[in-house]
Image (cartoon, rainbow, N blue to C red):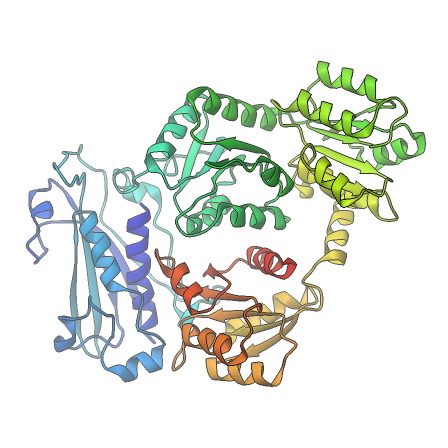
Length: 578
């Protein structure tokens, strides 16, 4: 399904870009040998599905149609300057179609529009053609309609979503991971597996199915946030090494987004990094290769944690006033049950006999030395992975902190606003969505976050040739007290950078006319000699290799359109914290 999505996004993006007026239509139907290109896979297939994308745009001259799939340059060079960039890679789309045993055909006339048709055989196998049961796919036509509520690049109309039932029998064939995304019902417990090794992802999926869990698989970073927002997984298993991003970056994005940080992340890596994983907010760390027993334990732990509606917290504190304050700020009969112990030995006995979702422990206790106490908690809870927060008035040295970090998830120092910090940290470690908290506690977390937000009063340069995008981002940033400076072209951005040395971060649209985002970033890096300035590329593309191209041009990171504000802010925070 991922490859099909990439092809259709490419073809639709180009149709949108080169259609100023009129319409763009996507029609899906069962083909009846109406393809013109000789293709053994199509010719021998029992059934072939066609995706026809027809626009009323500027069209392509006949002499250009022969080279259109080598470099997408509709009409002459002036067209590229007017509409911005050189397209979105038809050569890549044709390559993907070949991998699926299909082909892409073009019909076009200058001034009257273009029709691109993708033909795909059902049940394609590169070695043998698998005969599928008769498909229930019905021909359907989806007309793009004008919508004032959705603004996208170049005033393109919005498209009504193609429902899974319209592609019954096709999704499973195209989706190489064969996950459950086409048959997830309300109330299903969904796990998101982020893993580019399809073989291992299928092994994990089979084990999850044994426990009645549904699975969606992301094989690249580009899919992670979309699948998370769409399917609301109860947990994520995250491979550290992804083809287009580091798993650590994905973990940071989740834990910096107040709307995603409650989702438990179970890190999987071929290298030992347990301490770093826990410090950055992972629920567990799992070392590859994972045996069947380890996978069983992982999914069992995920289910057990999700099924515990009331979370159990152990507070170990000998000071009665402090213990009372901690209990009061965390107290919530429906969500959190609190046990309080006043000495270390009683607390260890309690931990031996009970499973807790979080342990909050003072370092200085009357009956046991601090490091011994915390390390013993770690040993007792190593199998369960219960998060431990040290909450103490002690001023730890760097060496003491380094030692404690081996056994804890967080170290907090008692102070004027420490109870609010403790609430926020505990809610995150319990994987509770802060939205389910009582209003006054939800407000504490939101106010605390806005007070300490690294984005506060930062100067952001937004470069985009679409004025509506500039307006939308400026409006959104105002709510977070971010100062927005806008530029409608690459040249204007260069001039602003020359006159203003107070820019903290840059958001750079890639597809701009005359000087695109790649060239603009190169000029900023070359002429201003500022390698530390964070530049986030904002691109409509989501194809393999785009990240590398952006980074080579000087971007610090990239995010794809349509941009979700919360996730953009999280990415900005990560770079500004550095």
